[in-house]
Image (cartoon, rainbow, N blue to C red; front, side):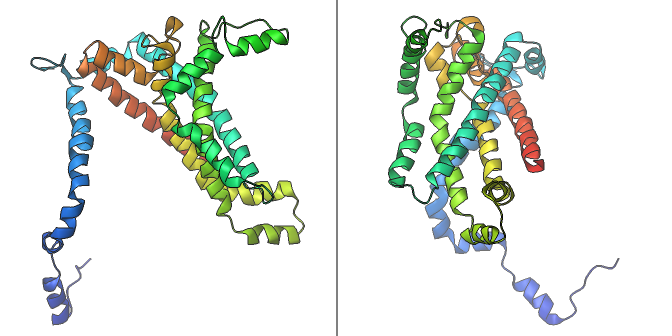
Length: 310
């Protein structure tokens, strides 16, 4: 194939007169000067820590003294470390126990808030969203009171209906249920507001046309609402997956750095924090963080494909 050649002198003049990138930047230097603080802060507190953690993951370093290059040995050790894989299993279990009910209840709440005859809609939106901005430390203290083994409110209610008290903080499974319930309580309102925005963006003319054609409510829900809401559902699933894989505050405040009985509440982020800031193994903690990045990226990609196919 022959390369395209300017067929006239005007094309060559236009190509020669096209300004370069640097000349455009210099021309608008005042505007770039105003937005430069963001990029400087991003380079210092965003990009540099990411690149430095990648460099650190191939070195052994306690925070003081010289770094020692160790290659992939920390990644190899990570793959054979039982506590790390326990934290991976705990994280996935908490994700499953929290994500499924959270997104379901968020969708139900969004439909209720979208009812045309609902009064005080703004107050309800604020009430559901306020859980997302409440201090997680205060939430953990309240949940600890509710799920306490001996004097917990939930055990008292169970005793009133004839069910014996449960060892919420001593059971490997129930500890995950407690953490998952905290996650649900905190983020269900946030996802409901996102679903509500998606519902309100669907044109009403589609519903009116479906009613005229004789469609019932179930057909309208599955053939109009859900298909048009699918991008919003995909967004919430991906964001919930990424957020759930990084749970730290809930188990740390509720159970401490040990993750509770038998490490049942030890998540990947809590394990990385312990290695980095408690045991001063900064190189190994960086390797854990990059392994988390790979796991979260792969799992989010799988979720994205599954939701798209559904």
